[in-house]
Length: 334
Ligand code: GLV
Ligand code: GLV
Image 1 (cartoon, rainbow, N blue to C red):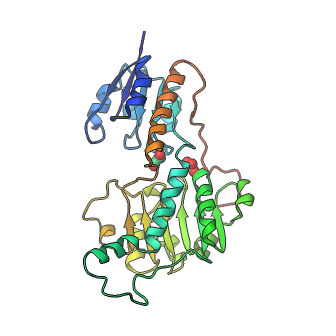
Image 2 (tube, rainbow, N blue to C red):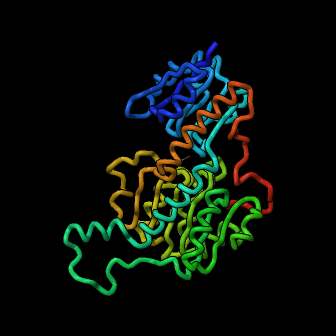
């Protein structure tokens, strides 16, 4: 008998074709993420679920999963999955690490430069007549040359960000991670505790996964520890930030600026205070949005499903561990 797969969004022809060779595929094809009741209605009797980071896969969904053998998410982040509940039911989990690392590191650098060199604000000024003449101190921002850069979460993406930042002639790259990362030596990054990173960095870049340990770690206290001239960049998950605290820090000039590719909720409501702040650059969660990358992600997500259903080794099966697992209990988050 053929396997049945539910896909929560329209994906690439190629990935669809791959799945259709051995599976009967049902998809949600609306322009927006699958509505909750649609998702719940479609889980029973499916062997596999192809989902996105916009789909919350929790106990309520899983209680309807009478046949589900594998959940494959087209993302590297998996905070939208209740991993504990999934594992309890012996359902396998696939995700898409590695293949989006370059794209996301690239976007992180782009967002950092857009924020620190005020690209969007400056372009807007040029268009609407604010560009009167070349002016000595107009549209200035902090540069990377000679700067200390702190990276919170030194996994695959954090490391690639560090490698790309270095050629800007930065002075020092610091990182915070629960465990020591052996790759850091070759990159020339120094492990410090979080306080030290926050206090000393001209740029603070968040590259950690969202877990119960990292939720809300960027709070009032964290922003107060940062330099007034600091630029804060987040391309991981919005919930690592206490967003109200960030609004306060930006409004009260406790930090210089922020660039966010992720926030809570997504999409951010148009009347949100962050949109009113000139010193905040907001992108609509496009970290991995390179054409080839997204195609590869869709194929890997499909490949994970096929392998799991055929009882083969999945190309990217999630083994629960995060950058913040306690391997080095002497390092604390607070
Ligand atoms: C994007 O945020 C991802 O987790 O792949
Ligand atoms: C996190 O998932 C990373 O790839 O760094």
